Image (cartoon, rainbow, N blue to C red; front, side, top):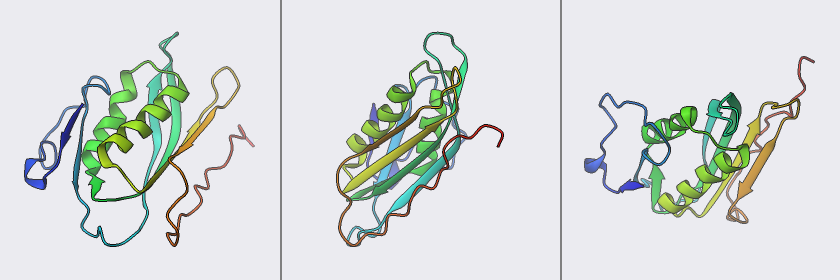
Length: 155
């Protein structure tokens, strides 16, 4: 796992960067929070997240919503996009994917607060939703609801 800490040391932004072969090979980068004196929420939504079933190799699909209140660092968005894309050919259960993403971001950023909602589409007829957060959000920060509806099939 690689971490870059200065904007001048970013290795992916502004350059053609191939999709990493696996999450372990993905380089997540961070930059200084330009408003570290303020408590605010950042949201990333990945409505087309994909990974592979570790047993069958069949694709799994999810809508991920990542909310965090940054401390000194924010994640560089292109590196996050490439990191999430690296799961495309990675075999892992829904719970592992969701929590691995959360833990990697917490390790990289040391945020004041982070939550992730993994809204997985059905596998074997059962949708699996996975949720994690680091604790109570800081007081006074507006944290909008994730508002991803439960899976209802066709209607």
